[in-house]
Image 1: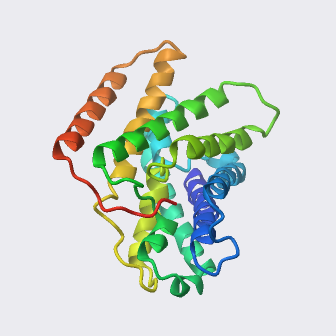
Image 2 (image 1 turned 90 degrees about the vertical axis):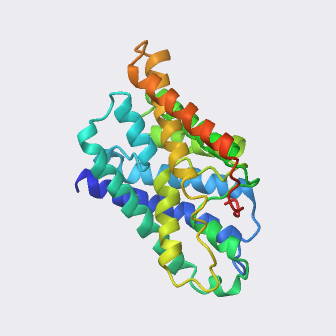
Length: 269
């Protein structure tokens, strides 16, 4: 299996298990309905761990365009491989969302609320405010990348790293995920959102494209900052890229603040 297909399969597993826990806790007549935020965060943490165990030896299990770009910006991954990795992640996320749709096929018609259905596929803000929502995704992904690099710098028993990264996802979800549902991964949000748009889901409503850019731009900028921050602070290598990313963050947040656009609310899952 090539690295491209490793990212496809790994990200597909991630979304099947992660999107699956969202569906199970949200859709009506599921035995897991209303299980709560703890179950969702644990489900996503285990999803990341299982996906990483599945393809880590093949592609490194990035499973996230924000992580791929962060590693490339920090000089830890070749830029030439970035497009194929991101393409694989997007394809895998899309396919994983289709599997979740099929698995819960009879439950869509049983669930009336369109926002709940969208929440199975993609994230949305608990409080709709563009500046804060964007900042939240940046902070969450900053911690994600910083945490992954820090975990990688430590010595664990063989094969334990993916499990520890899974608990990092749980930690981020518990501490920072309540604001936007912590996408912290452009593929995790955009791929399933496209699937939601295309699939014949009964009473699905809007795919909320007005919000869709936030879980793409926020994680990319926050993740790249996390990688460059780690390189500067822990490895004592300050690069010009750090200043470029900081400038981009200031500009994007400034525009979001001035524009004052409030996106449409979505179910947090």
